[in-house]
View 1 (cartoon, rainbow, N blue to C red):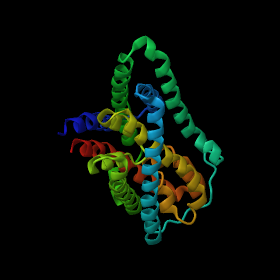
View 2: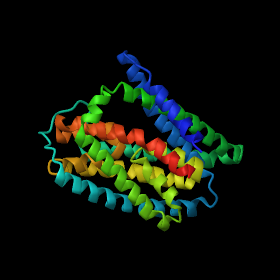
View 3: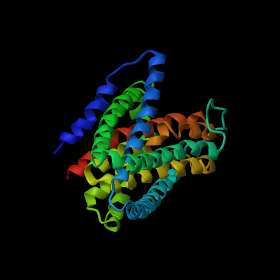
View 4: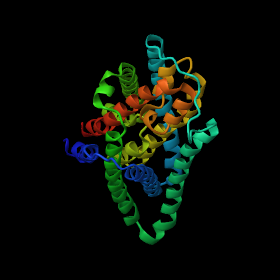
Length: 308
């Protein structure tokens, strides 16, 4: 029952046990994470190209993503809004952060590039399918799985060398509260969306457990429930990141916990520069802790719910 869980957790734990002191090696690890994400998404696009009646399936994918994302955001924003009224965090003045996005369009550009990568994968799959047949899609799934294992090792290494000690994480009450609120409200949204998507409750919970980690949720869900639902999980989590880029500058000074939490697991990496730029340094440790916890929760939760 838990073999799939162990297969995913072992690379993550193995990477976490690696202590890296060389800045150059850390830079290579960061680049490896980025490259692995793009490779996984390209291969996911190839798998989507293998769907029967692709046009009709893509329409279903879009509708299902809209349902799941809308319900998830309603639950997340309500829960995080409630938390923001109970626990306050004052955002500081905007800081000039090296390489930080200077506009919402610049921040969103990276997310749009991920979307383009998936589309390129679909086009590549359609072009190569007449030459390779169904073996192309089987090979793409296998390569995506191994790329995910490599990504998990690198992510684990990043988490270990992020500069956040376990004591700092456990003592950051607001970061813990944001992560717990985001996770709980997302799971409730998954339960609410499940019947509308013709899914079992446990499948709905699994679909909602990505918390913004789109490369992970796309592969794990796609492997168990098929490329169509893997695509729904990916676009649902990617849409979270896109919305976060838009909302963070608008609300972080009035509702900092809400602004940090809406990005889910991405608050420790992709949306962190925007949080730091518009919220100040006081928001950074809270965002990193929240994203760190959600990143650790996502793989075991997805596989646990899929195994039930």
